[in-house]
Length: 86
Image (cartoon, rainbow, N blue to C red):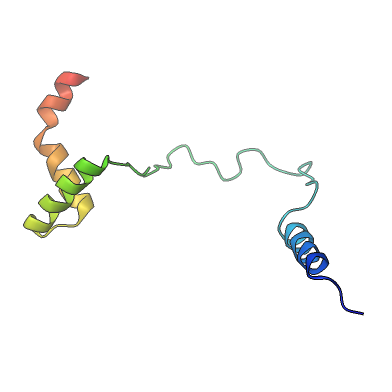
């Protein structure tokens, strides 16, 4: 007798869940901050509004630059304005 499709799908879902996550984890032997580095520097993503992203893209293409370099150049050229805003 064959299992119904729903039972097979449910079995797969349960297997996927149990394979990826346990119900409980034992952190009693864990070391707090083991991988923390105070000097670590994060490069967080910056999300531009669509109109600004298009402007930067066009600028980058004209100057034959990648987007990151274009944004850095634009910001550097406006450093004084940014300092006043601090």
